[in-house]
Image (cartoon, rainbow, N blue to C red; front, side, top):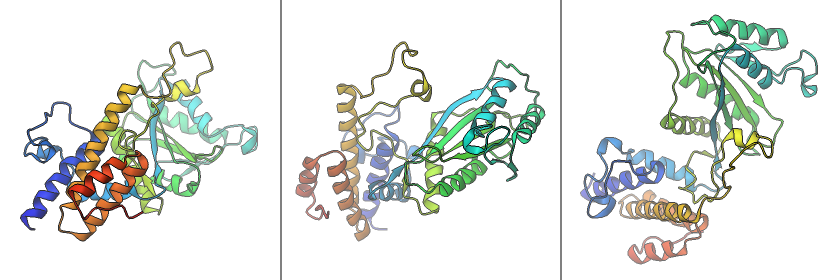
Length: 327
């Protein structure tokens, strides 16, 4: 690898990490910007190949954003059983009425069908490890939703959710079911918090980010143009709303969140995102690999479309004559 390529890859690693994961909280800007050595610890950086892979997925036309959310959890067996009945649509007219349920699949691949089978599943979970009382002081099950926009083949969503669960929750009891009764096909996944060896699930913000990326990767393996980028990375203006707020009855939430991000927050996010996108494009343009330089053109076109930022195209074209919009 030439020295020029090493420098381009180092720039790509740092700017790509900032673009997709943000600046680490304790990291400080080093003189000379992101290309300066030591601005972010090397152990915190994405690999150059990982950055390229995420960039290609992000700038691809008609990319679909995945959604992975923890929607709640059962604190006690009464709540857990009620959730299993809910996700299986037990007794709903669309699945045949009294006693009928959607097909629920567990961690072994077995299908749980019918009200009696759902009740038996709940009884099994109660004693599969530490005993779960009807009422508990802690979360005994995590309720997770994996969703895709309209037009995504439901069978791909289900199969990707199955692979995602197997990858992340080995040793846990879990069950999932596909819902197709909305515009967005989605899977409800219920995971018993305590693993068979006694270790408890304790997801953090970084885990949710990783889960989104894994779910997107499984969808990509099935030919779905799925991506898992942050809203600020793609110039999003809407504030993220919590599931319980969206589901609450009108007037029940004392202080609703604003739907749109504040002007100050929007401007700061836009400025940081554009800076990162520009750094990525310049790093790709400095590469000796023609494929990188083509990707740089796609990045510039994407940003111009997504952010409405023709100034970036002009600035980059002025600095690097080999970057010109191709679309």
